[in-house]
Length: 86
Image (tube, rainbow, N blue to C red; front, side, top):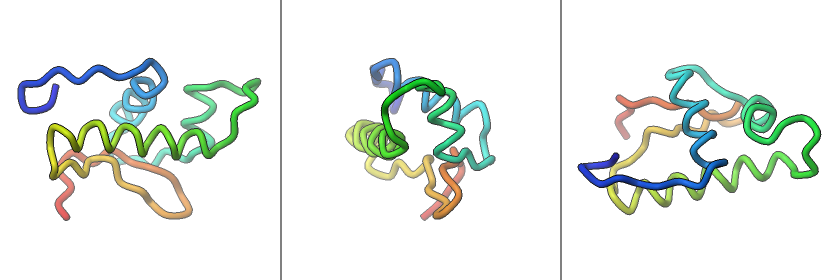
């Protein structure tokens, strides 16, 4: 829910959010996210993680233009930081 609006995500996007939120403040590598959400035996590539992060950010930005909770830690991965300020 963002500012009182329920935001619906496809299953894979939801699983990415769930993994990040269950590890608040900890960096999750693309490999970790990929393994958790898509599994080892998937033919997709790590770029799938990047694309899903982009979609999640865009969707949440529609309801909160200041949304910055998903942070990219270059060379490391992503982290969910609910108190992040630009």
